[in-house]
Length: 511
Ligand code: FDA
Picture 1 (cartoon, rainbow, N blue to C red):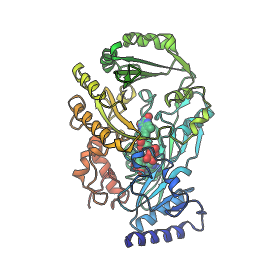
Picture 2: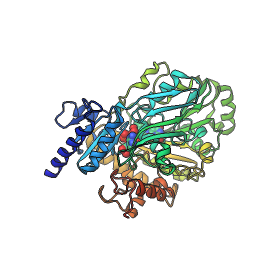
Picture 3: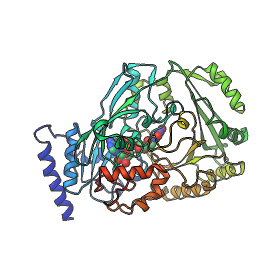
Picture 4: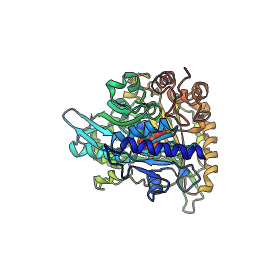
């Protein structure tokens, strides 16, 4: 429309006038005519449901800042020309919100803002928002074999979205979430000002550690607290089918998983396994993956006591360095060179849909039987059960916006993935059926969900231009519970005109 083209011209003029003298803008702004536009847009799309080859709406411009002034200019010129801004770090948003919008929009892609400075003396690091977790783990390991950081397992996840939405991984039972280990942050606010912890104030600093970054500004960098890890850790993976007693094991796991020593992470991955070569006979297989912050000889007796049915022996265990365990949980061989962690290209290139739930009471045997039955209807599906407890129970449920602390046995992630576009409806339909089935077995009032596993089925702002509190509480209370109110108050103060918005952004209340 002519409004869009006027806004585009206005934006470009404004942008050039702001960045012209101080910093060169070659390779910073890409229009739809640029030959790099499509490959850049596609570069970190992790879910083909929103691929650039589909009809998904595309941005007017993609901006790849090399300097904070480029971010400042984009925000200032965006507000002046009513352009919606989406911010992308690693592009892993489950619903593509960092790069798809149904109104004319701009993407700020932080791929070039990804420097990492590790300081072992102060056990901290500054990490720019466009860095991926793999780069962060690599940089820490380069300097120390006894330091780590408690964030997610997938190396291509971006720290911008991940940390602002919580961020958990294999050592979160000992150290909490990534968001629980943030010392400082830099952010560009709606007025284009660069703020740090002191100048943004504790309320806003609280909000961006779990409440999602995008609602509040553009996060430029985090100062993180490094955590100690032993020189050697132990991993194992034991899989059993229902016929081999997996069901009984899971029953027991439900009650012991969150009670285990905080050095021990034992998650369960439930999937469909074929039992005949023609694929006609299927069963359910449950794999128990573990990371233990200590030696195998200490782990084996611990497991024999708490989950004897698993039959763990020394021969099932592999000792390795913490950084090797990062490779292991990322699905690589631990013999791979460590720099594979720097690769920003995702191995998976398919379509997916996910949802999450929290479990507070063990699910009954008959309840689980219904899960097996439903899972067998979608062979591509996966349930990942992550035990809570440990440090997660010690941190208060208002300390950060992430409220899922004491009282949770485990979290479930439901995941379905597929490779053909015409199967999309079938898999999403199946996932919604499974989610309906689970309702009586999981947390209630609200039925809680993990913000970083974004799910637009939970509800969206009516349209991205008018957000109402009632409407937003549908999903907001599920992700943030009682913290939602405080998030709305912070948002109303720092971005009263609701410039930073998407389908599930925190609403700002009318004055
Ligand atoms: P992306 O760039 O898509 O951003 C996600 C959201 O944050 C968007 O709304 C975006 O606008 C906003 N945002 C991003 N950068 C911002 C910035 N600098 N300032 C303000 N807002 C910003 N989670 C977990 O806890 N543990 C895990 O192990 C995993 N593993 C995992 C594997 C895979 C394959 C996927 C696809 C996802 C996960 N996740 C996960 C979920 C992941 O934490 C979640 O998708 C994060 O939001 C991804 O952050 P990115 O920066 O990669 O995404």
